Amino acid sequence: MTETARQLVTDVTDETLRRLIHDHLKVFAKFTADNCSICESLALPFVNLADNAGYEGILFVRLNSDENPVAKHLMEKKAAPFFVSYCQARLLECDNQTTEAGMLDQLNRLRQLLPQVA
Image 1 (tube, rainbow, N blue to C red):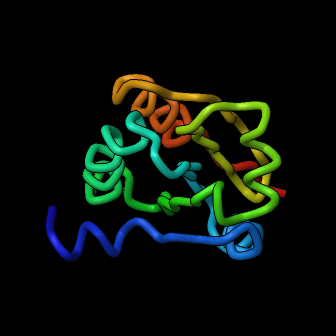
Image 2 (cartoon, rainbow, N blue to C red; image 1 turned 30 degrees about the vertical axis):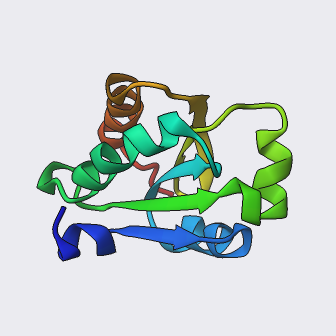
């Protein structure tokens, strides 16, 4: 993993995430938890996707649910890792993903979505 790739995934808080989904057309968020082996196994593939030119224009963010009250509340009903796709500040899809293929499928649906114009 290159230093450049690490910088392509932004670590955020609940508050920062709310701001970023309004500032960026498309956001792909990974909600993680401490001591989550699946979160760890998907960490490098997530960073590699963020470093892939095919996903340029999508902001990749990571949120530790153990450190953020809103995320922690959401994760009480879900299991980590939990992926959320946003487009034009709207939540499009949120789902647990336990495999790289599942994460990639969700990301590709976000990539293919055409933004609405007013």
